[in-house]
Image 1 (cartoon, rainbow, N blue to C red):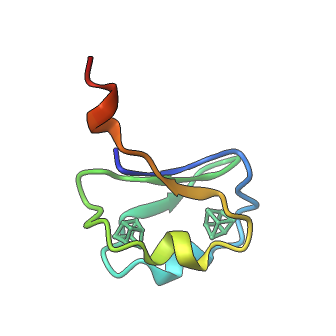
Image 2: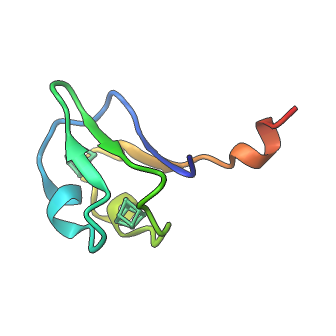
Length: 63
Ligand code: SF4
Ligand code: SF4
């Protein structure tokens, strides 16, 4: 789950329209990124006006 959306999301929709893979969907309170679809391009993180998307290196949390 490399790129994740946090509660700072204001549902502006910028990440949804900007994701070339269609990996992002809007939920009731914030967006969600499907880790099986995301290619980790980083576009959504760069486009988010709320800095609500961040890269999480989950390889370090394996144990
Ligand atoms: S990192 Fe790229 S592919 Fe993954 S959700 Fe963001 S815009 Fe889409
Ligand atoms: S760009 Fe950021 S604030 Fe806008 S919908 Fe996506 S995660 Fe939420």
